[in-house]
Length: 371
Ligand SMILES: *Cc1c(COP(=O)(O)O)cnc(C)c1O
Image (tube, rainbow, N blue to C red; front, side, top):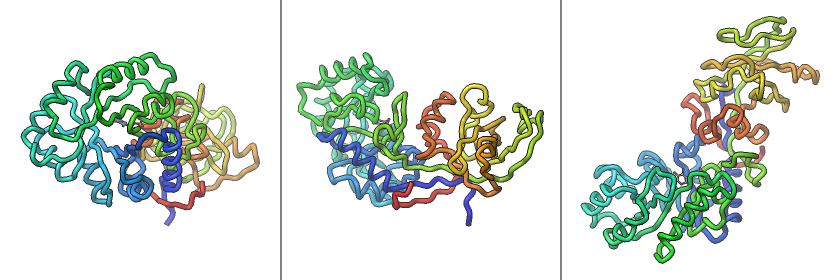
């Protein structure tokens, strides 16, 4: 059967990216962050690769209990960290059942833990607020909290707001605040996400927590995964539904927002926001059009993206004398068409595009390394 929309997941690229991270942060353990369905790559299917690639001491990280359940159900027996912690007693009981490590960032969690003091055996990570103002305890409460938690195996963590920028003063300030609060305390520490793993080696500490990089995609404001030696794990593609010969002045798609400047071939591609392809790609012909790739040639999207399809200008193919036919594969993003560029051109981030794939997309997994 020929798939309509297809996300091909190259598991050998995932293993490669894990080795790239290990070279970047050789002194640190790696937590593979696989929340949001492994950044849209399919959590169940990437689990065996994580299991094979991560040494026993390394860990996986997820945001929710559902994700933790999926990982455990698919054979992940290693350390598992629940990055958002737990919000009530039921969630803590589920965390105990799943043997996850937890993050604590507010006092109510300390009371919940105290009520399960006999059954919670995993590490408790105390999250410090150092400048992002999302989750975490103020540094001046740290000693009292550690006192309260002394019966548990503990760790210390924080999270950066702007590690995607090099030499960013706010990151340097966050590192200093964390250091000032914890330098005297002999516990495992973790600060760095993917961006900090690349940009701030001084923040690698005992463990780096990488998500986006695992999937071969760059978290930085410029460039793409390949510039960092990473290999994109996902190739997202669809098919040409139809090829039309349009006349000068023909209007394309909903509300006729694109008018053909000349007689030209238009391709209709079976992809839309119902699959997770962003609507904001619509009508960007003026400045930076979003490009799709057919037969190795980039063609711009024209008019509005609709739920199930969109239109592309096939003139770049025609100019080369290449014929595109119905059924032809169209690359939306992947190794040859970095998702970072598409995200930038619409004011989004690659994280959102990858996580946004909907249940309508088919997945195929392979380990052949062919790109
Ligand atoms: C999601 C997340 C990460 C991973 O971030 P990337 O930018 O994808 O590497 C690390 N730490 C925490 C607390 C997170 O929530």
